[in-house]
Amino acid sequence: MTDKEKGNKQKKAQFLPWSAINAFMMKDFQHEVLKEVLSNYAQLASAQRTGLNKMIKRGVKVNGFRNAVAAPLVIKVNSSVDLFENNAAFAGLILDSWHTLYSDLRKQVYDLLVSRGWEILPEGADRTKLPGFLAQWPKQDEFDVLVAAFRDTYSDETYSDNQISLMSVWLSGRLPYELVDLTEDFETRIEKE
Image (cartoon, rainbow, N blue to C red):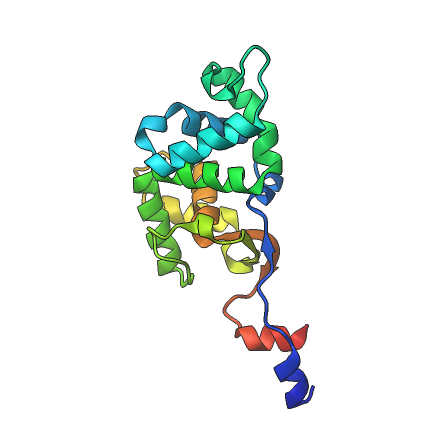
């Protein structure tokens, strides 16, 4: 490849929509996340509550309710699944809200990822401003490896494997669609393609 070709080759990150998380979530955990967020409004930031209410009001239909926000929790959760699976903005806001509810887990997973050499946004950064998830995941840190490392480091914690994995996904802004060696230089990976 000539220098000119190298210069012309675009180095673009490929993003997947926030709703792509559903390819990695089991249905029962998906319901658990929705239920936790929708039942803990008081613990969310005002902007999160307002955003969720607007999206639910516009995107969720519940028989007998003009405004789905007023529906009982179980009905609202079940009726929100379709919106979570198909609306990237709603999925991103749900994940952001969920991570807000787990400040201890957030700090622990953030520290774990950084200690393993991950280059990620600061813990408090607003990830909903991103266009979605990066599609590349470090092959040396598959979910089972990260969960085991978390359990070794924080042996007293009782978080589920799903919670640890989801927090890793959200904080890293990555989904394991493509397992890669992220220790390799970015330019070297581009040249190989």
